[in-house]
Amino acid sequence: MEDVSGDAMETYTTYEDYLDSQITDTDMFYLESEDLARQLVELGYRGSGDTLKREEFEARKKAIRERSTQKTNVPKQLSSAGKDLTDSPVLLALANREELVRNGKLTTIIFIRDKNPKGQEVSGYIDYALRLKTENFEPYFEGRKQLMPKPSDLSYYNWETQTSTSNSTPNFQVIADNETGLLFKNKRDRKVINVDPNANPGDNSTRTEIKTSEFLQVVIYDHMTRRKS
Image (cartoon, rainbow, N blue to C red):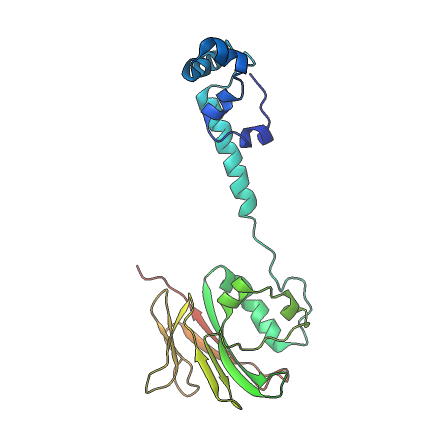
């Protein structure tokens, strides 16, 4: 049987492409029929003389696809992996949640209140999963960059300029016009998270205030997601 390497197999999208690779200009000159030329190659009268059958070709292509899938499904290393976070309660708390948030078993909202580089006090609610997906978090876990709220986050407020923004994300809907205060509805199970410190945060949700000198205030709201059936 013809020994077709994996690299060569990947260049053939279909079995017909594979047969065509063994048809010469001379074959086409005399046969004047692409279908006939393919049949002769498949039967072993043209080309290498020991051609893969369609079933054998498809089996090899399937094996290549499966190997490729296994490679792409290798989990990426966590951004917090191998980092020394003992001096940072906030980063340690985020590191402990990173894997669960990345695999979708947990959704987390981070409330941060602190001063920006201009000395202005700002606060905001951050969708941790979205930030992990759209940013490289290694600089944060390495202490080279400070995690701060942005106007593009779930909610943002600049206390000096009184600039206020709110944005729904793929994970949460912002409910701002509510008499009880700001709410976030999880888009997966439709459960509401209440960030009022004097209220119950909601079903399957917890509120954890992090004691730290790194920020003026940090509160983490965790919600164990349960997809609605």
